[in-house]
Length: 180
Image 1: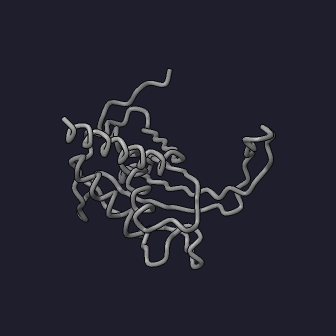
Image 2: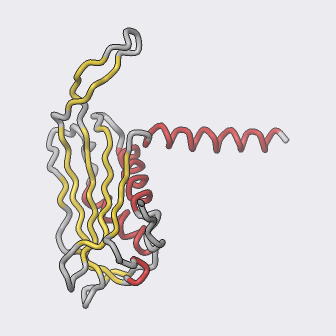
Image 3: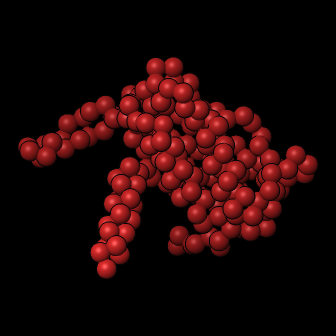
């Protein structure tokens, strides 16, 4: 019985740690009206990754290649959704971009005084777009935004990116929910 409790505690701590690491990440997706994502089976990359250069390591740890990591994560998630990469007549064209606004300002409440003040809070964003090659219009767009903190480990950045991409593509192929 003690092993069972220990296992439950370990799982709880693992997931609460992940939740804390990703609690600031907001993900949104949009599907074009009338688009049936389940009908798309193949894709091709239309551009190389567009990740902002960060020579001072303010948001991307040294020796960490965010371009490669995002591409790897997208490829894995899309394959898990049944899509295949192809160079001939793809059903979708895929592009992603990321950026950082180091000058972002936000109101932050002081827990002691309950007063708000404007403070610099760098934000990062990842945009993924799937484009119909016949019409050249996007059929699906996903965005993820989150706080940027210098000094994060490679593993933490990898986990944050994996969380964002996985959450972004979680509903891929499911019928779109009406907002009205």
